[in-house]
Length: 165
Length: 165
DNA sequence: CTGCCTGCAAAATCTTTGCATAATT
DNA sequence: AATTATGCAAAGATTTTGCAGGCAG
Image (tube, rainbow over the protein chains, first blue to last red):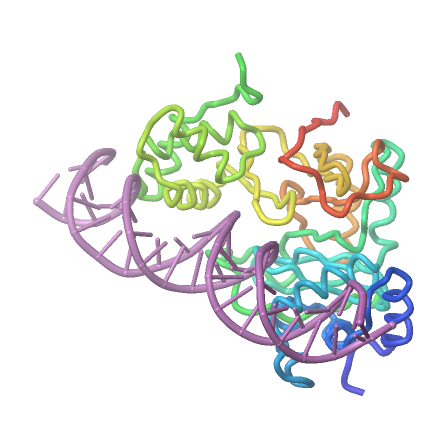
């Protein structure tokens, strides 16, 4: 198959979560959830584009409203990987934090165990419970160290490199 | 004195850094740097307000251009503490990362040593060099755990709680 | 003087909201 | 049938950019 995340229990679970809170199941909501699951790291703009390939007439405001709803239902979560646009992830994908290279824009996913020692320290010393899924660490990746750092990060959301750890 | 950061070597160092790269020293640039040093965590909007109390006629576009320049000169750095507005910090203040409570909005500063173990791991396993000053960890603070989490984070930039560690 | 900077205004992004209509339950 | 959800368009909020005049060096 062509998509990153296969655990698209989508519809059934979605309907269940929606109805439990008095919300309705609509084609738009199914499509948005599917798009987030398939895209992996999706900006609202990317979700809109993806959804429009399957159905027409869908509006950006619906994307925003739906993403907010899905996040409330804990079916998706978002993280800030750059200046402006947040990116959404499916809750059915494995949890991970992000490393973002400031020079080339590359995004590296890291599994929770890498963050856990820090999380433990924050819980112990600050009574603070971090949300690892929302964590983004900015810095320079292996390929970009020592380079004269361009004024701005290059174009596009850049490739995502899931860590194998 | 009434302001957080006293190490306002400001003007001299600013002039030096500017001239070294062919930039000019202007009243606006001095005022913006001072404001960032005095405010501690400053959004562009807050900087504008602060600067306008000392001089008039200053425009928001100058704030943005100046903050960008000061960051290039490494005299300030920014972090994303919330949804939209970035906050700027003086480089003359002690380095620190941020913990942001999603429920009450409280901001807790943590010193680099707390983050260092994670930084070491990322360098060793991912050849990734994190920028600790830019690091923000979202989660729930001691006071807010177990609470029914409001739909939205409460008003205002909220108080900043420098860690004593 | 020469050319960098600033203020102003318009534009560009990105997101939210009001409202009438369409769709779900 | 009762309400919720959507599409559309306009409004907001934030940041960027083009220009002509002003100021630093």
